[in-house]
Image (cartoon, rainbow over all chains, first blue to last red; front, top):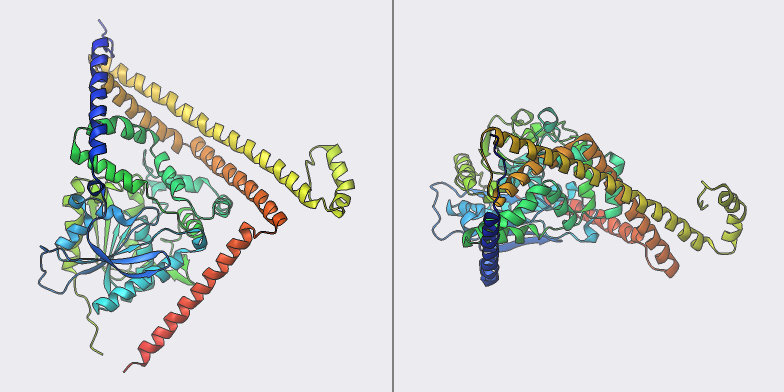
Length: 380
Length: 177
């Protein structure tokens, strides 16, 4: 006899509904009881050391119990993406990339791209790379009295760091790219079932569409960018805010993690229009970066100029940046010291995922410390 | 010269005959506004159609999701298994719908529909901006384009200042003993 695949008894239905109702009622009280300090994100102490327009450079205060490395300090500048806020790398004290680097005794600087306003709509990738980022690097070189520093780029920030390192190789001692798209057409040869939506969407548009979009929008508003990310996984997000949320309602740690993440997700800055135009036309559509045809400020970004050691970190389950676009890119670079590190989790999970905690920061710190030979400036 | 609804011969003829005369009587702003409203109405309609295309893709994804769920349940039945928890059924359904929706949105029709939606939205947005420009001009206020052009000039000047500062810094560094 064939059994029915679904056999839900009314009592089972009522019991599960009642349990969910109870969980939601208790969860709502828990959520209301959390204090603002419990929900705070990016709490690692830091000081602003430079600013220009809306861009800030922060220096994180050393961790009191930090390991003291035998050699000179490893100085790093972290550049996050423009489409999200830098707080992701210090979302929670227990899952903070920054705090883990500080605990290893690294000197950590962070560039905060700030919140572009309408007047910033003409900012190009050149302005970010040869303007803000280069100024940050110079400020750190001056403060630390070294000729070159270590650059860690995250996603879009990885592309900016890559471009900066190629245009100013003398200022970058080691380059670390995390979840960074390099070959924007890499997914063509190896399409992924649930990933690379942005790549394919961008290629479905033509250059005139991008122009019309940017001309009519000015800046890409934070909410519209957030909406695009949500639409990459609509059913997954529906599940996240319903079943997924109910699942964590009776676990304070998981609930706080959820709420802090929401605080970060809801705080998306606008992206300057010209930046968006270049990003989509030159990179997503024309894939100029790996063709050594990407021009910034009149100079071509030649990846063969990347002669410093490069560590390329990618996430196993990244659906935003398909791994085919980020992995196996060493042949494009001029360096002979190229390494890759795979991290479990997705695009954001690379920094906040439970499994990634044991891999990402220790892996990067080990790699950097093994190559930490900053060139001290001769005394003047 | 403005051109309203040339698809309609009588309107087109009247426009060609009397349009310049109307402009001469100072009716140009009103005629521009009328044309922009017509364009905007067309753009709004275009956006509705484009969004309907996207909705069609989503509906196709939903149907595919339902098929996938049915097939999954068939396999369960074949294995002699039964789902007796509504939550478990919901999770299974969402999982199947997720895969189906990804496939639908990443398909050629899905990408074409979202691209058409982007085009239509840009078109509609620029229609409203044209109207806003006409209003600003009528009221003697700076238009969006004028303000943006000013920002563009300021940004260009800032770039030049940046280059000059760098050059000055390099000269100073080079002249140090």
